[in-house]
Amino acid sequence: MAAHSPGWSLDVRDPEFIQAFQPLWGWLYDHYFRVQTSGWEQIPEGQVMLVGSHNGGLAAPDMFMMIYDWVRRFGAERLVYGLMHPKVWAASPPLAALAERAGAIAAHPKTALAALDRNASILVYPGGAQDVFRPFSQRRQICLGDRKGFIKIALQRHLPIVPAVSWGAHETLLVLADIYPLVERLHDLGMPWLLGIDPEVFPIYLGLPWGLALGPLPNIPWPRPIATQIGTPIYFEHYGADAARDRTYVEVCYRQVRDHMQQDLNRLIAKHGDG
Image 1: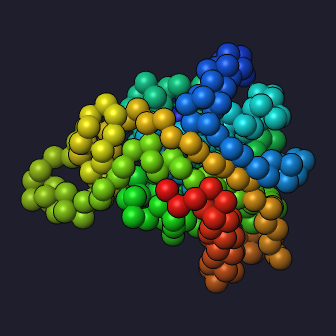
Image 2 (image 1 turned 90 degrees about the horizontal axis):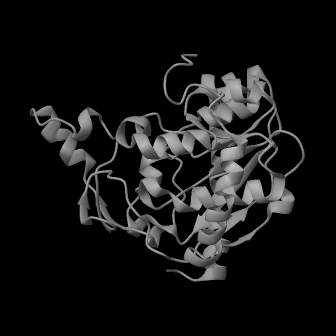
């Protein structure tokens, strides 16, 4: 692991920094986003893999509210690391630096396994940029990006998967469309990428501070109510290296997690309204 590279060190996480920011997160939680949450009593003791679906652009307010709830309930000393797309460090260095001190590490199997070796839990958002910038029309759909690496890690390390879904953050900015295929084609014709990186998404959205924004630019979320829910832990029938290498079984486990999360999201929408 390249410890000198941003996002690749487990030692940047700072419990004092996390605790110092709890009052600010608490104010945002209670007054700005007016969060309603449930299900935290279902998290078992020991290591877990929290698997979430998030909204709201790079600000991802539902993700930060989840982390606030974790610290509020378990304290900063119960280790949890959040896997964040490595390109965030290039796209928004100040935001990435703050997230890293709060426990964000680069989303990669090596970092995830290293965190687990420290007896930490991990928070994974497999859908990545496609999830956090998914268009408003897709707000009712769980998006895990068809990425299955998290399933393999859970199987290898005998981890229960704890679903973490949210509703409402899709209104903190309004993603009209993702025109990545078009912009990718223009890049093939010689147009350089924004910031020199391939962002994997290229949203058109209405949000602060830009008004109408093109591309995965950092945003300030509008104040909108957010609901979060921790689902019942998912335990698979088989674990171990052989299970993790079985592509068919990995696919079955992936669909089980996705369907479970979709059911949780459906219940959350039914409870809080289809915004």
